[in-house]
Image (spheres, rainbow, N blue to C red):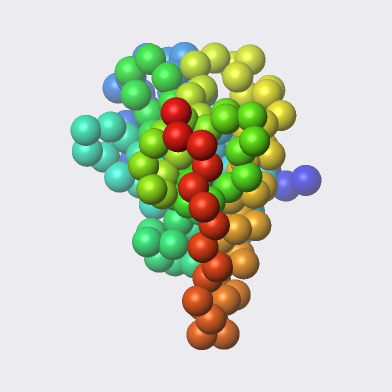
Length: 147
């Protein structure tokens, strides 16, 4: 399998300003996202926290996931997480749309539910984009259990 794109110099500079352990988690999570969705576009935002948005189109508004880098952990967020199947209540969040998973250590990256939700988010996004291309309205699902 080919290596994911090399991180931009801007991303590396932004990550250099934070704890090396957290920066490494962010880079490994980025690699995971790009291995699952090698054609995804990546957009870097720097505000109250450093964020990376991933979309199967070139539009950030159609992002399927995002990585947010905080001082002590990284979140893998799902822009339509409330529509993902979450019978075990693993996703964090109570809003109408977004959900996330906290990644605090390298061991967290090995948990299978990370890839499970990432793959589900990619599949959901691809389906939604196909429906939009055909002029269909995406089917609404009830929100997962609030936590």
